[in-house]
Length: 141
Image (cartoon, rainbow, N blue to C red):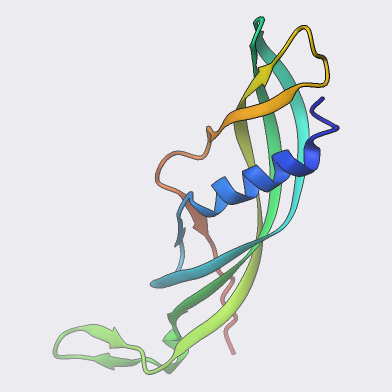
């Protein structure tokens, strides 16, 4: 049933993934937009089954692109009075990353109708509520 509904499950994971929250780990800047490029589902485990529902855990490898904006420190000047760098330009770029998440599904089933399959809830169980940190590889000239 999971493989027959894989496209629907991936669509729900993508929707939930975009709501997680993203931040830059290695730059002072913002994550403006995230697009999911690919989702690979693996390691499916049936946790519990009853007469009307089943709980399933799965791992999902998500490859995504993030549009980010951050200070260009190569253009910064140093303010010796305040002892801070003042960047004069920003960098806008798209970075690609991959993350593996644990996902929980609650599925409505009917033992009398083996074709019945409805996802009642989907929960991304990792990472933590703090979201996903995105790293930017900086190039020095």
